Length: 341
Length: 299
Image 1 (cartoon, chains in turn blue, purple):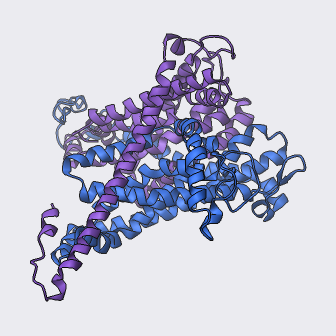
Image 2 (tube, rainbow over the protein chains, first blue to last red):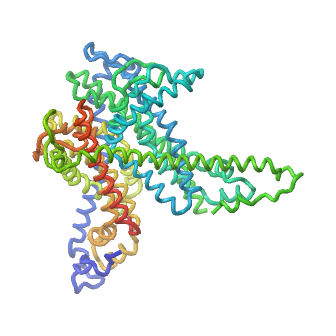
């Protein structure tokens, strides 16, 4: 560190004749008063954060209140969203958000966990940092750039190749096949889920890696010493140990997917509001519905309904975030205790 | 490290069940297949980044010329036009957002590390995590309801900057808190032992020591806020013209990108790719620079 304690101006600012026990010291250059003021300022900055959070919850609750009291439970159970007839039910938006986010989770978790295992367990030392860093960079790409890429590059491929292929292979299978029915449009729930999966991949990788690194080496060595193969050691000793933390990583990814706006808005279609069982139907997520309709909401009830969607999104993402943090906290706390023991 | 351990653990001794040769071969094949799958997953993750970067570079590079950086967007049909008002708008929004967000973020981090106790720390950290998890569109709705609707009265740069500041604060808190915790206690004690008041120790010793990490946190938060689109659509709306008035709608690169992308004209699509390339270059260079600049130091 360039700045050592002995060279710093703050030190020379002391009165040169100060002696220990000198009463003047406590008042000398900005002593007690300065300390009190500075501590107060940092406290104010710190309290600004919970204040912002509280204000967000309060303001959204107040603005969503007219729609919530008018429609009650049907606000989340009805699938009619008609601003001319002033009927507002958000079920299709909730459905779109849940389906795309779960799809993202299903696609991103195995890939992300695999990449994290590669980085922590398999990769030669000189490959570890580059691979981890490259995947981390994915998190730095702005949402709108994913949207642009999805809009012009991903949806045509989905429409012409991936979706017809899935319809031909999985379509005829009972139960699962119902997910892949109807015309291939490219801009639908499925593409929305795929783009979300790409976007949450860095989150899943980063947290899984952290959790895997917290698994004690003894776990692996014990298993290997018993004659297990590498995969048996990972599946039998490492993964069970890290299970809660990996679940936390996946759910933190889910939380990020729930609130994503621009990228999804550009590939999800934003047209049909009918709920069908197929992933190949265009839809809306809560976030894309807000983005599309916020500036159109011209009467009070319509506006209140749009804010109501935001309020639901806020509460759901806060709950999912909390749950993920508790899971991750439980595993890293155990690791810390293990290290002490 | 462990590869050598599993390569030779089985002296082949036929007749003993646990050294059954064919069974061991099956288990080893399974292990190798999983290793292949895991390597493929990593390859997939890495290649997606390069596919997107490659796409944006190839599609966006032809759009970049002098006019792109110096002219305002023109109506469709006119030759030329660029994203200059969006660049200046983004700069203005980010500077104002940093002026608002950086003191709060650093101040809160100082409080958490140097002054706070027990449950207040837990509460602030918890709130900061939740603010970090707020969907950005919800931040936009909040700032619209809090500022745009009544207080300011119209879409404005100031409202956009406030929204970006809310996104920046938790990122700054998290990185700065981590780096302040790394400053050795002996440095603080040395200052205090000389009779320097605590606040001057923090300003004069702790913060300068942690400078590299603090800069990293601030730059990362700026990079993150610079790409945000959704909250800006609800707060500054965008502007085709140069604007330096914080009380009026202001352009921003992500908004201009979006407007170019959703229009039906191929020429505008090329400009959208160009804007994406500019955005990625700025964000990517900032991320890599901070990482390289702070390598090995306290961060």
